[in-house]
Each structure stands twice: as structure tokens, then as C-alpha cells.
Amino acid sequence: IMAAVLMVSCGTARQAGQKPVKTYVQPGSDLLDAPDVLRAWAVGTSDSKTVARKKAMASASAELSRMLNSVVATTIDDYSVALTANGTTTASKEYLSKKINVVSEQVLVGVRPIFDQWEGPDADGMYRNYIVLELPTEEFIKKIAESVEGVDAKLLSDIFIKTVNSAK
Image (cartoon, rainbow, N blue to C red):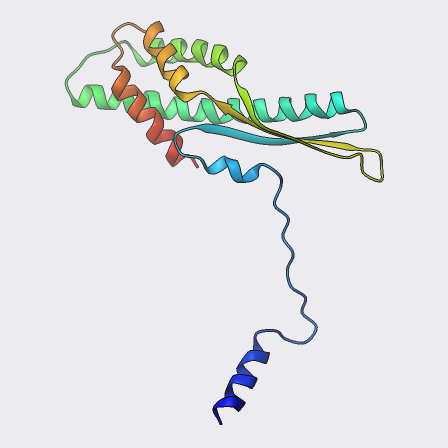
């Protein structure tokens, strides 16, 4: 009786006509979940390696910029709230925001690819360039601390890292 039950239950997992689902993981996409860093993934496709590379870099840079803008806005709000809760006065949110935006633009110029893989040419003669860009978080916080007088670098860093990790 037990053998009959096992034989019946083994066949129910796969019904007639169903095929197993195939999944494809994009190269480099597994690197996006790293803690404490901002990373952006993109792919560029073209019949030219140079153009494929430019497309991938532009797309990843735009995504990283979008992520950074969101994280910075939340960080500024949380930092201001934390300081007022502690009874500390600081530069206005507008001043801090302007300084951080200048630093953001400078740091985005210095992003580095941590993953760069090519595929192709395929049957259509197209190349694919997979890129993951990483924002150097410590360098970003250091530059903010240097450019804004009176900023609590430790508090700002803690809030920034917390925001980065919650944004994923």
C-alpha cells in the first residue's frame, strides 16, 4: 500500500503536458543586492561594440543617478529630522541639498564598472554589453563632509547607508 501511495504522489508533481519553466539570469544582475552600496545594471545592444558600450554606460549611469537622487532626498529629510530631534541646529535643508547635489554630480563622474561582460555577435550581428556600475559610498560621504561645514559625518553616513539598504 505504501509503495502505491509513493508512486501516485510522485506523478502528481508533474502533470501531463507541462514543461519545466526555464529562467534566464541576466549576466551581472546578481551583483545588485550588495549591502551598503548603490549599484546599477544595464545592457547595451548594437551592431557596434563601441555603441553597445556607450548605451550600456549611459543607461547604467542614468539609473544610478536616479537612485542617488532618491536616496539623497530621503537622507536629507531624515538627517534634518534627526538633528532637530537632538536639538541641534544645522544648515538649512535647501543649502544642504544644493551642496549634496554638487557632490553627487562630481561623484557620478567617478563611478566605476565592477562588472563588464560581452556577448556576441549573435545571428543578427548584434553585440551585447552588460555593465554594473557602483557608486563609491564612502567617498561620497567623505566629499559631503568636506564640502558642508558643521555636518555630522557619522550621522549622515549612518542615515545614508540605512537609506541605501532600505531602497533595495
